[in-house]
Image 1: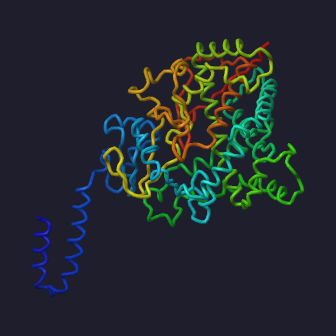
Image 2 (image 1 turned 180 degrees about the vertical axis):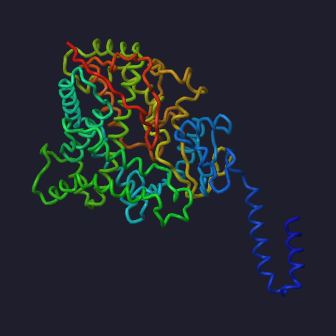
Image 3 (image 1 turned 135 degrees about the vertical axis):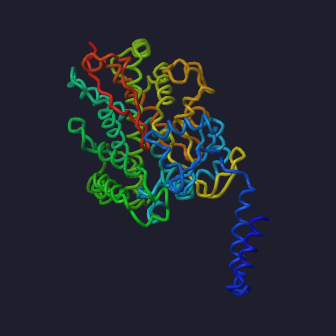
Length: 506
């Protein structure tokens, strides 16, 4: 080979300066390096992707809305792409076929988790305590999922929580009644409502009081900062050689936010352990179940924080997007109202009535198609190399599925950019992880465990907002011109929060 001849020539010329015997180990190492290089070139290639810059790779390409950037790249490079971010490889699936390969065909290996450097659970000391960020789907992780499924998300558990969800929805309605004619930030209101539902299910306490929920502070602001810290571009994620350093301070800030959140419920854990204060309902709740399962305080803190973050943030965003789409599409809002008038015979809205509200459920699904709460889900990782769609997915590469892009794929959806709930009325497509065209909650081993709860509480809160109130935009603004721009961290948020004015129905 030409490179071997070149190396031999160099070695020959160097012999006048160095003993040839001493040069043999060096030549051997160089030849071994190039042999490995050529062997690696003979294997199946990486998925295609945009040409990386020196040192930076494709970091400059990502922009502030990577879900859109990567969807656009997929139009050029295909449904499975690779990018180099610094020294790291990222693999992105942007079609239903690619998603099925990643989340079903190769789910056993690709269900490992990629954990950003700023996430507190990145530490080996705490990773085994995490549900969402556990590196592997091992026995500890399976045990946590089993506890959550049986105590929180089983059919029996969901049925026992129905009255609590209805009561908290009515608390929201009563609070809004006092706000009639005033501007309301819908996202903040529904976040506080969902969080209150969750806190009562998990620890039988109200951690948020609607009347005291502020614009910039409180749990929503703290949780928002935490999400920003762990999802911000971070040098150690691009260049692991810097992992011992926290040059941007994101890991420190995320840990501080995590500890501040835990401080809100740690006294409750201690009281419960010591038996000084039982839960308010008099019945066993999730905290009791964790204590009965010999969970440590660290374990409980991580689990509660992840359930609050994953449940309240994503559900509140889904509700805000549903309301925004219905305000922007008056004909759909009219159909929802007509259906509710037809199906709900009494004034009090009950969760058991929701399955009969088919058009409302279709609006929920259509909103999730257009605005998935987590446009990429949490990132997966390849602990070993594997082949996906005849391309190599290298060991330790980050693997993403662009759920946002799949939900707007014109090969799957007719008129994909328009809000058309009717497409779900006579469709068997669902978000339970078997239809890879519609992956709002993920699929495979890492499917969102809170799916059963979100599927009930989001429609309940939306139905409550519409059943008891008429809504309008401030200053008589035209609903059709409502700004629907997005911003993304781990979650897909409205760039400009939805502000509406409620009016009680007579």
